[in-house]
Image (cartoon, rainbow, N blue to C red; front, side):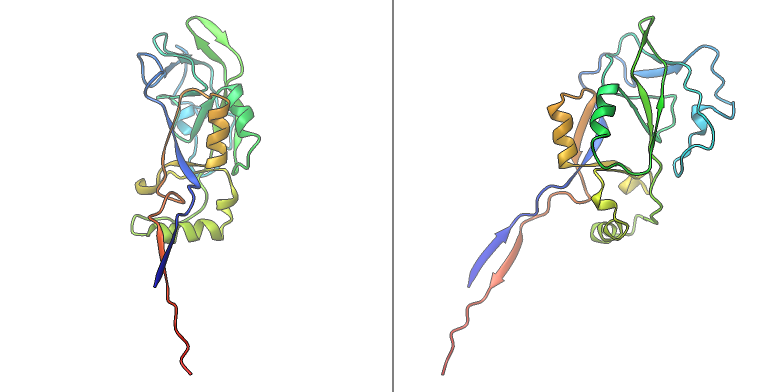
Length: 209
């Protein structure tokens, strides 16, 4: 009996905000402009998780804490966690890959009293998949494949908590690293991630006349 083993390649990683190398304040974005109305219909607090906004969101103005570093991916407390605050450099990298339904919004940014150009809010609605905590990794991966989501380079889930991550392909991760995109941290993904080696037992039978 011979034993052959093969390892499935890493396909997805989790994309997270960095907590190191971003300065002394985290999140980096902690407040909007002094007159910002969080109760207004166009407030960033009303950004939906499951659809593109039916209104033009008011991002005026994103103020980055002076003790934080200005990075390509910026962590935010005021803006609802339904997407990412990205620089023009990161936006250019992302737009070269297959993204799900999304929309970029230009965002006015202030940092240490100066206007900073080129930042956008990337809104990422959750795909319409009925995931739950009881589902196995294999079941979720099959469902994702059935919906052709596995052909995308970025997928964001907000629920259930077990799968509430932004997943990116290895190709996108490598492109971000090659471009030296700052403010990001990659983690090992549960979905389409590494597997224990699959062991196949090959039996050799002797033919007897």
